[in-house]
Each structure stands twice: as structure tokens, then as C-alpha cells.
Image 1 (cartoon, rainbow, N blue to C red):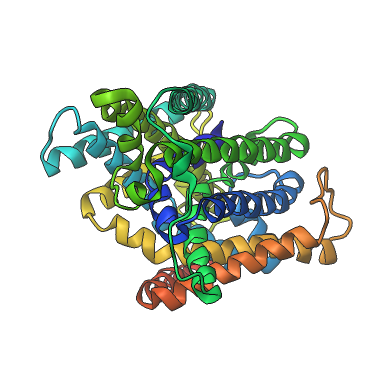
Image 2: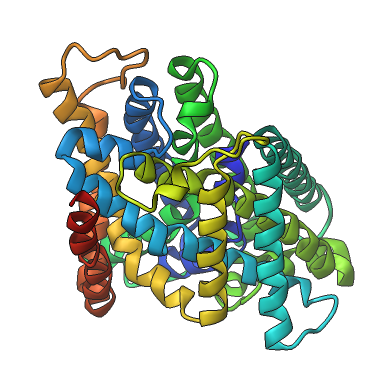
Length: 419
């Protein structure tokens, strides 16, 4: 539920229109979603080996430390603390406040105040009791999935759609055009699957991690793939590609066809539930990174303290809450997320590479779970991650350079804490 709740955020309600624009064919449209799920599964099956063999709080920070040395582990943790995770928390919180404004129009200041309030509330829940945070995540994720399944069933069974909408639109059909479009569509799809690594952040708090981490990741990807493909079937069935490409709120437009004028309100409620569950997953897991860094003397020592009563990494959660709230009011978090996207995939590639490196350098390390079809699955995932990184550099060089600056700004801090 932590993994699925983190993945299923607002992306699936926005990205299908972009993918339809790039593919313009039902066969290519669904092929991209299936391939995106498979690539994500390959990454998950690879990095699950690291989570099972090193069940410690911090996820990728721990693995990169072990395989490449403390500097690379620190740079990942620094990037996660400054932008990757905290800016995502801020962005999701603001998205929640803006969607909430559908029912009660708010000013910009009130929207940001509501966003910060949700971050604080979810942080308090996760400070008071780790199990309460996990239970909260279970409830919201199951509610989210149940609501989405309800929309899928209504979309398939009620009148308003037609199978003719699955007919492809006309295009020039050139091979280079198709490959380029599929590449752009794939990047959009992979963004909607991001979050599959969340469970490894809390590996140190999971019972029987050698069994439960790989199983949770595998089940999560299967659940998410099924939901995504089903949602997209309903969208194409009800709207078709032409309407999807021109829609800003593709899910609301589809729901209005089979639910009438109340469709947009129903979808807004589902999105609100989805965003709360997604942000709780971010807050619950991401604080374990600065907690793990502090335990290694690579961050403020206070972040390594466990609350004497609640037995949670309270200070790490509070530090994360404060910085995410500042990013919320800064108004620059959307840019920051764009800047760091390519860096996220650099670290994903390095984590998959860590599986290969540690198999060679640490052959005797205990591995309760081993990546199937090794080394084929990790290598395929690394290739995809490299392609995504190169594509980002080519398409958005300014963002890529700024993202690299953010990462490298952690180098002097690493040597400061080391000293």
C-alpha cells in the first residue's frame, strides 16, 4: 500500500492526454503503458535484491554507499533531501489545495497555507506512531483504488463510449517519427510509475524483509499496471484520441460523459483522496533518508534521534516538514522537480548497477532474494535509464545543467560533515 499509494498520485489523471498526443494509435498507446510497467518492474526486481540484502532505513542512500562509496551515497541523499522528495511533497500538497479549491475557491495565499497545513498534519500522524502512518496509508490507498475501480466499471458498463474510438488517427507513419514519439510518450508514462522504490526507504522497519520487500514491490507493480491500463481503456473508450489530446482534465471530461454534470466533482474527490495517500507515502518514507545520513554522521546529528515515546524518527520528519513547507511558499518547486528528473534516473541506473557491482565484489553477502534472470534484467533497466537521461539532456539542457549543479553543490557539504 505504501508503494502503490505513492505511485498512484495525480499523474494518471493528467498523462494519458499527453501519451495519446504522441502515439495517436490505440495499439501504440497501450504498448507504451505496458512497456512502462515492464521497465518499472525490471527496476523494482533489481533493486529489491539490494533492499532484501541490506534492510536498513534510507533505501538508495544505503545501496550507493555500499557499492560506490560514501560520496555517491551522500550526493543521492542530498539530492533527495533538497529537491527530489521534499519538492514532490510540496508539489503534491499544493495540487491537493488547488483541487480542493474546486469546491471552495481560494486565494493563492490560502491555497499555499492549506498545502502547508496538510504537510504538517501528515507529518504529525507519522511522528506519533509509525503504525498509524502505515495504517493511514493503507486506508487511503485502498479507498483510492476502490474509487478508481468504481470509475472503471461505470465507464465500461454505462452508455457513452464506443469501440470506434480505438481507431488510430492518421499520421505520416515514418519510422523516425514513430520512434521519437514513443520515446517522449515513454518518459511521460515512466513518470506516472515513479515511487516504486518507496518501500526500500523503510526496509529497516519491515518484518522479514528478505521475503516481504520483493513481494511488496512485485504485487505493487502488478496492481498499478492493471489499474493504469484499465483507466486508459475507459478514457479511450469514452473520449477517443482527438478529444483526449485537447483535454486539460481528461479524467473529468471522460467521467462527465457517463456520470453527467456531476462527473467532474466525483473525479475531483477521487483525486483528493489519491493526493493525500500519495503524499503520506512520500512523508512516511522520505524522512528515513536524512535519518540514515545523520546516523552516518553525514547530516545534522539531531536527525538521527528516535523519539523516546513514539519511537519514530521525529526530528528527521520535522526537518523534512520544514523544508517542504518552505518550498511550498517559494513557488519554485515545479521548476526544481523538472531540474532534478534526469538526476533521479542517474541514481536509478546506479542503483541497478549496484546489484551487478555487489554480486562481483561481495559474492558472500547474504541475499535472501536474488534478481531473476540476472544480469539481463538489471542491464535492460540501466539501458532505459541512460536513454531517459540522455533524452532529458538533449530536450532540456538548461534543466539538466541546473539539476547537476544541485547535485554537485552537495560535494563541499560532504567534505564538511566528513571532517
